[in-house]
Length: 277
Image 1: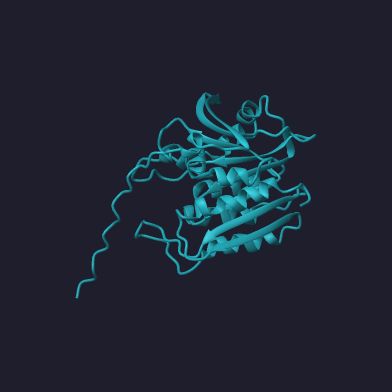
Image 2: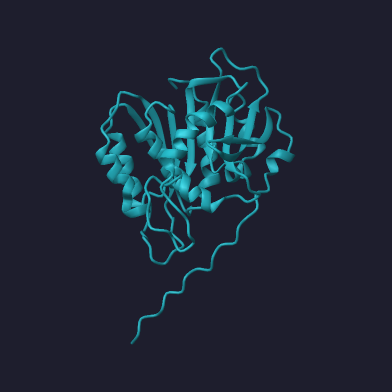
């Protein structure tokens, strides 16, 4: 008897970003978006700026990768629960939730053969150089920011990029939030990076979140039952680093896409927490 053929899942249709929060009444924040050029590239930046006066050392600031999708998932309730937190969504010049070509390059740390869709990889170091340099300066112009309370958030490939920043740019952010990170990517390349990277003296808080029902749409896998084992292994490894305070949260019954909006409440709470809180 011949084994049944595996039928690939149909390609997902690009989804527009409704960005409903920009049309809603938000009592605690002023929302803006603008195009910013850095490194001869153009990024769409989404900002939520507290209406309250900044504290003495400036606002805590949450940087959100995949800014189009992140701000598409934000609600007034999220912002009103964090009235003193500034948010900066780093997105792309598109009306879609994701720019799959740009994010595949910016959020991956090593060059691999082109995917069937022609997506290049390996741009994470160059992207993080911009994010912590020229792009950061332009985002924070006229925005008083507490440099000790910058947080980096990312989901999926962007979650992997947040961990890459933790390991390769210690001190650039004091908190890292990685949601359903794609540690499976390139034969679990990130676990090899962690093994090769010695601990530093820079303290940081790390929040890893993932669902226990995540599955890749590609039939070729990898697939697993329960929470992704490579992400659990990364959490265990990071906990052994003396300067890191690592928390892990597993969402019961949630798949990969659903963890993005589910992560926002905890992400804003951590980014808002006092420096020693």
